[in-house]
Image 1 (tube, rainbow, N blue to C red):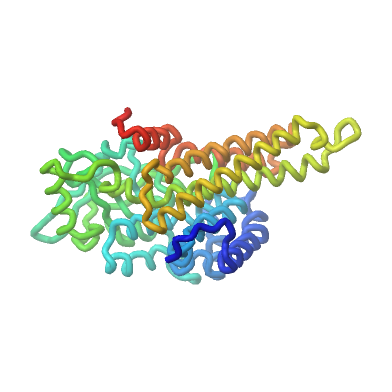
Image 2 (image 1 turned 180 degrees about the horizontal axis):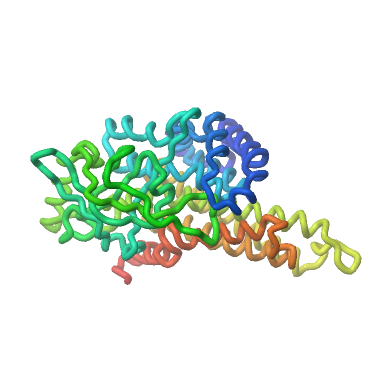
Length: 408
């Protein structure tokens, strides 16, 4: 693994970028408005991505293990440049896959991650289920319980999850549950719920402000029984971790927690998604400003508009640098001593909201209509200061990291 940081992606990364850009431009963008209006999972687009090898375990594994660290950010940016709702439908499965990679054994990884994607002929999706109606940012408040039935070597899951991407329609669900309520977040574990397991059902499907082509729903677990082998990491490892926590020797912070391990690994990738949305809106606004005339000249001739675009581009590039730095650090196992992963997600998410709002302003009345895509991009961007840790939670994580204080 190279320890050299480079601002110039190699030939392989550039080839992937151009390949994905073509798919985003030719397949995703023409379908974006339709699936946003339908508020349905765009199965035909996912299947097309699967046929091309974009929606596959192999593709994401190649990007995930790219020694440069920027494989995943480049892929995410291009897909979400195409469309955020369809993009999330294509990559939503990866959050469940990351949960298995972060917490599972080699055998569990080999068993479950292929089933999350299915085949190009029979496409499947997966869901990561952490948030609950009364536990979003506060993951220590999870009420979903997992009780071990030693006689049958099974875990019994009961509870309700919410805001689950692909929840209820997934072949494989990964569920974070509490095994020891007295330990708070340290008493939690992740479980795989295999396809067709009795007791798991879809609850309410949410009608959303943005990313509407991505399915988001509640997942109800009523006496769901899964084999002992579905506990990610295995029972021996769980028992050891719980024993350390009970003795007060558990590791501080979120890395020992199943949900936090998943979110920490995925935050730079989510930041890259936000950058894709921001870049798309910026490009629309730039083209519009160069061709739209008022008072006999293009509106970009006015400093007020030109300076807006300058700020938009500067923030996009700064956000990308933060994401790439965090991704490079992660691939080299460099510690996030200043919460660099949270920094990247925070700044990129806020940048997407800022840039899309400015794009609407530059387009004026046209920007407020669905005749132009910036209206949809603005709606899509709003979620990036909310999911996978709100902007406030990211600031809390950063503040604790830089101060060493238990800030609340």
